[in-house]
Image (cartoon, rainbow, N blue to C red):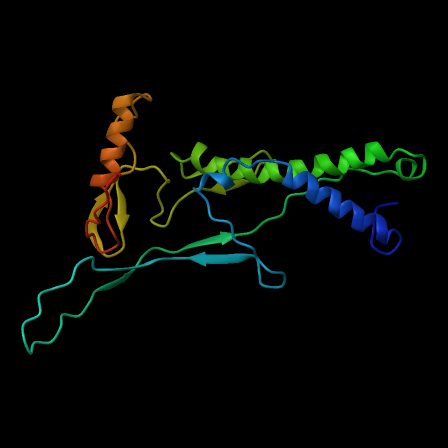
Length: 208
């Protein structure tokens, strides 16, 4: 018999507590990296969320006495739709495990299930970087996962486009050099020299 809230309500409540304990015992590298954004999705609100951006011009224009101020420019950027999905595993807590004093096995099974959930989320997030040079990859379940960004290209690309300008920018070093001090310095320079808003205006950045 499977666990359910009708026949074993107290056990199900305990199982949820143990599962959460296992989930929270994992230190997720990607979630804690600052590279990703965590968003809670309430029940009954659908399984998709659309993300976009709006940029304006970076600088003000001169205004003479009595003159009308110049109209600010506004440009909506690309949009990207995120689709939520669930991951799960049947851990098979048997009748004998519940009735023959095998609670250590039950607790370990629930704790491991919680850890697997946290590990799966972090692994899937890390694949955004692992497969950042391609537009899709096949996951462990055989599904094709789209890894394109708003302009339709892969995350790391040499000619990303802008919605309101013909300017392109790159966030991938030419010739894909091996990791070195020089490569890191080149990437830092690339970040400084290839930072534009959707209007193609250079946005100044500096390192402190």
